[in-house]
Length: 457
Image 1 (cartoon, helix red, strand yellow):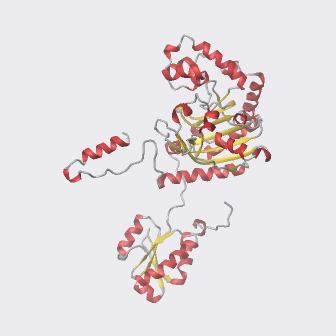
Image 2 (spheres, helix red, strand yellow; image 1 turned 180 degrees about the vertical axis):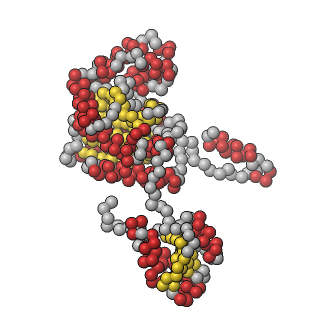
Image 3 (cartoon, one colour; image 1 turned 120 degrees about the horizontal axis):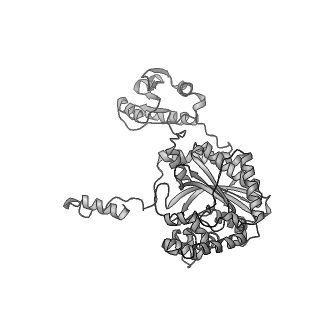
């Protein structure tokens, strides 16, 4: 049910006279969603894993603008790709220039590599990103019109060992996220541009006379870019593809040797793989190595990430010929996979202490105490409202805090505070000056969340 239909339902359900003219509650547009705190735990965990693994490998973080000139994507991704032909959010600015919300990051990063003269840096340049992208795609499980991607790019070197290292880095990240065992690496080599042109003609010859079995979409692909037929999701095309000419019979000797070396390194690294001759990826800039990680149970219908070489993209966007390889994964898809695998992520958001008080004088004492507790790494909330201790303890229970600090009229007068263990119901009275020290003992120094702005980011 789309947003308009939902609003109509609301209007019908509330169509009595008393609600005439009432504005229905707003909802998100179709294909976008709120990231609620429970899912932010997953996002935070993924970002932590990604940063750690990328730093180990020497990558630096980059963020490109949310929108680019449309030509950046048309020229790089390809006019025949689904993204350019059907899925881009494109608009004109006040000067009539065509701009597009970023549907993927690689083209924008290569544009940045050229514009910012990164070719003058030590090569290869290793970059990673964590950012939102936008595609007018059909919303379904793990697919959204605004979605988050993590990815990395290695620009400036061509070596089969780099391809193997890129795949290894992706697998290490999936391993840290608890989903590597449920994913299977699919890999192929789609050759250089000359080999692809020869193979495209072979596909045209194969499909000649079989057009009636193709969907309207796939008939268009046959005319514009036959290689995209290998990526088709239509059942009849999938069946025909099983007997279609294979890429490996058309790629050059050099490409085959490059591919064999990549596979040899993967074997040396202990990485299992499936050679998939129909794997092409959905973007026109790919060449040589392409790979994806598939859910073993759902196959291509649930690819959680992939990548490949794009040695001609820099030149295509106006730079010097520069080899490169990259990888990207959809973070919402990864989270869905983690949930299917029942992965529990660690969270540092749970509170340690709730501070309850009675009276204005007690509240005046509590405010600096709360600040001291927080500065010492104790996650604290409190000094809320004017209710009795009983009511405030109910609030503390709802937040599931292990400890409460209570300060009433007697405690203000005697300069003490009560520390209550919420789990067992016991409590002790301590001098006010010892509250922070006593709470730290109970929480444990290893559980404190101490923030130092001078710590490395």
